Image (tube, rainbow, N blue to C red; front, side, top):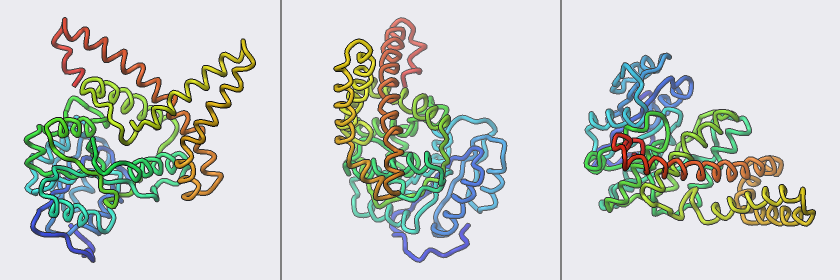
Length: 350
């Protein structure tokens, strides 16, 4: 399926199967396929699972020369990845999203890590620092994701479906992704929690990178962040009691959340007590100082004006994350209480 011969070598002692779920992938998927054609050796197995949809993604997939599995009804990326994995032959399964593109060395980096670390079960990579969509919100969100991974611990506590690799025998033994997640959500994080609980090691390798092409708008970002990520992640945290100090759950983020709500409470109290304005200002200053490394990163990447524009969005992130945690906590414990009396609800917490 390759139009260009890669100018690097992928170790041949471990075979890799690439699994890509897609539904209405559009132009981003075409760019994804182009990167696969450019940077994946011809002998590498590429499996594309077309999860329903109404566009020509299935046709583009077939034209690429990959193995294509076309599903008649949409079941979600978790199910699509599982189906692709079950038909794969490689020692390593590399999951990538249909809206990312590979770097020239992405695959070789993955192969080298697994070759030199036979005890490693899985690894995750990172978005690069040059997102595909050029609008402010897309640049902010994807750069923030890059920063989060680049400053995180190498010893990872979750998996990542956009750029994640796992030994096939481990993936099958653990039961794959939880198909109860029928939309793009936290099915990869949930898999990572199960892997860690079973005693497997996951590492974050920051040099394994892909480019994210997704264009974020206000509505799509808030909808995905709140309903498809923060809420189900909160319930997963309570289910597994995984309050780890990593990625989006770092102690600094938790303190920032408290400062955000403390500042809002102070502003509300200022209606009755003028001195509360000073308290609100103190919370804002503390937020700026605590998150200075984030804003300095944005300044280095895109300049001072860009960095200044990220601040309200970053504080809004703490605001809706805190709200989602509160709602998710209540929802989890209410569902858990009803599950005791009604076992049919148990699947809602998985």
